[in-house]
Each structure stands twice: as structure tokens, then as C-alpha cells.
Length: 289
Length: 245
Image (cartoon, rainbow over all chains, first blue to last red; front, side, top):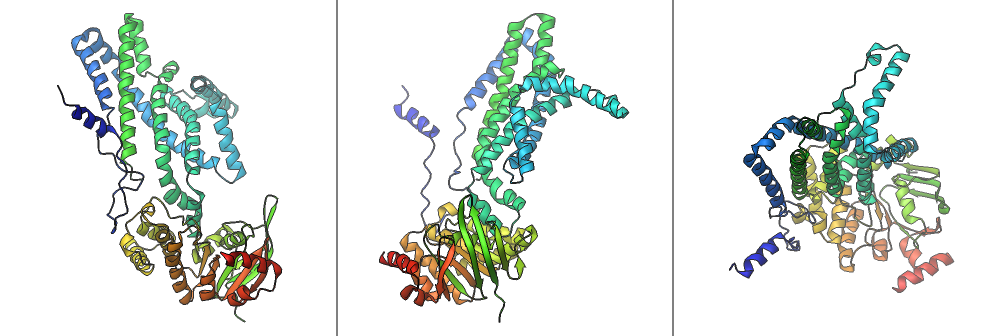
């Protein structure tokens, strides 16, 4: 019988350690900031990632027909999904940062434009936005091109991948703007005032004083957005992007085996999101502040 | 006559419906230590914050070191010359004490890392916290934080230092360590404007004391004279309450 103490110790190792008391003098040199103590233990939720991965491998290894065939068929879709998520996310961070700064801007014009963007975009379903960018936007570009007699625009051919990225960035950028706004506003005003009183410009103060502190606040919700984005990329399958979901539909249409196809697709998405979640959690522990 | 380093003329400031400053005029000469006191809401902090334009005033003029506070460029030039110490310290929480001192030196004064660090270490030594250079603000006591904040302002080689109730958020036993640093600074001939109710400091270091109430300067004079023989009724009432404690 395993001793009682083993489980108790294991449980304890998962608990957060209380912060060390920092009132010794001379002060020990720390490589972290009080409040951002590093966690020493391995993230306990890795077991779920391992479990799902093992299940996937077992399915493919024990029943290569149909699972291995499906996997071979959809793997390029898997790559597209990952590419789409990562590329979109880089631009979403940029748009979100600009939008967030716009939302707190004192200039009424900038504030109005940023607020209008957020309010409008948040009010339209992502699927509708993606369809608009794929079908309506090219038509609009062509019409404008014809009106101003500019052949380059009049003969515009829609690139599904680029338009999908645009749709995702525009939509998620609005949510990200609100996250950044809240993060920046959560930093006490005195930080900005102190920085300005030393002669630093608004931008310098933002970059060197406010944003580094805001990162700590926004990291969890930003990570959350990343996982939501990863899942929402499945919507681009309706606008001619051959992502994981679309490849799954194509395979099902040819072989009529919905149960196996969608079980595998679901497991593939699950592995992606679970790994992303662990990565974000690792980032949170890694940051110095 | 010497030109004053701070020239404030008929400054008005509104916060919504509240008329916080009602035509304040004040001249401060080089090397003067001016202590401003008054009840809360009298506009003393607002006046101080107007001097480096953290607060935008509605009308009147403020000239610092011959530079009129108007354009953004002027304001940054003035802020470079004016150090400010806050009631709540406002140390950059994500940086060590040393980094707090070097950041603006490098970004604004464009000093090299080595030069900025040398200046920072000298100043930390001056305010008596050499051994805490690598500590983060959260690891420091209030008094230590405020001394780092003073050193941070001094690192920019300001011509004027503004203190906005520097000891109000401190435990009594930490007040002295901050006041000692301020006294030493006054002795060196730094031009200082101090919003504070520390009578001891005012008597020891101030060349002038100013009593403000309801957005106006009620009375000013030598600290000893103002504290012991105030001419205005309002000043007497305020001092009788403050000195009782």
C-alpha cells in the first residue's frame, strides 16, 4: 500500500508556494520581482496533453485504416490551421495595441475612431465578417477599380488565405484592443506621471514604464484569445481556405465515415489547444514581472 | 533684481465645477526653499503640479527658468529641469532601484549605461541606500522608496525640486530619514518647492512659508513668523489645529 505521505506530498507540490519573506538584510539578489515568483514544479496539466496525444497515436497505430489515411489527407489542413492562427495572431497583437492606445487617447478624433471600430466589430458575428471579406470585399474592390479605371483593382482576384487573415485580424483586433485598454488602465496613474515628470515623452513612458507592467495583467486574457482564435479558424473553412476542418469535410464527402473523421479532427484540435494552453501557462511563469 | 526661476502669474484652474486655483501668483528665486501648507483641497498640490504641467491650468502664465509652459516641446524641456517627488513615491514597480534611476537618464539625457549607473550609485549612496540598489520597490520600506524616488529625480540634474507631500504616506519613524535627505539638499542650495505640513522641516530649511486656502495664497512670510505670529484669521485657525497634534 503506498504511504499516505506520498500523495500528500504530491498534492502539496501542486499547491502554490507561499511567497518568501523578503525582509532580510542585506537584501538577497532576486531574479524575479515580488509578486511574480517563479513556479518550480512542472505544470500539472501536462498529463492531459500526454493522454490525448497517446490516444491519437494509439488510434493511428492500431487502426491505420481509416485513421492513418485520414491523418495523411488532413495534415496539410493542420499546417494551414497553425499558420493561419500564428500569422493572424501577430497582426492581432499589433492591431490590438494600436486600438487599445487609441481607446485611451486624449485626442477625441483618435478616441472616437478606435471606439467606433471596437463597437462595430464586436457587434457582428465572426462568420458573417469572414464571409463579407471573402465575397463582398473583392466585389467592392472590383467596383471601385472599374469606377476609377484602375485595372489592377478592377481585375482583383481574391486570395482566400489573405482575406481570411484580414477577417480574423479585424475581428479579434477589436477584442484585443479592449484587453490592452483594460491592462494599461490597470497600471496606477502615478507611474505615467512619474515618468513624464522625468522628461520622458508619452511614447517613451508607455514603452518603458506602463506596457512592461501591463503585460503581466494582459497575459492571461491574451492567451485565452489565442486559444479561441485557434478554434475559430475552423470558420474559415466556409470561405475556401483548406484548413483542418475543410479537409475533414472533403474526406468525409469522399468516404462517408463521419464518426472516424470527426473524432480524429476533434482530437487534433484538442491537442493543438491543450499544447497552446500549456505554452501560455509556461509563458506566465517565465515572465520576470 | 534677480530674475525668479519660477514665475507664476494669475493662474486659474478648474476641475469641472470646482475652482481649484483662483488667481495664484508666486515667484521663487534660485536657491529658495518654499514650503506651502494649507488644508486639503486648498489647491497646494494642484499648484505644484501646474509647475511641471502635470496639471493643465486654464489661464495665467507659468514661466520656469525663462521657458514659458505652453508648447509640448517646452513642457518636456521644463520637466527635464524640474524634479518631482510624489506622496505615493511612484517608483517604477518593474525595475530595480538602480534601474529606476538610470531609465530616464539614458532615454532623456542620452547618457551611456556606465555613466548613468555611476551617477545612480553615487546618488543612492548620497541618500543612504547603497545596499538596496538591486532591490525592487516592493522590497523596500516606504522611507527607502521615497529616498530612491528623490535620488531618481536628482539623477536628471534638475535645477528645481518639487515635493508633493513627500512624508504623508510614511510611518513616523521613516519621516525623519526622508526629511534628513531633503534638509541636506536644501543646505546644498537646491531650489525647492515643498508641499508639506512638516513644521520642523519648514523652520529648519525654508526661506519662505506660504499658507494657501480655497485656491488662493492667504499669507506668506518667514516660517518662524508665519507659524508664531500669523496675521490672517484663517492661518491662525489652521495652525492652531495642526500644532495641537
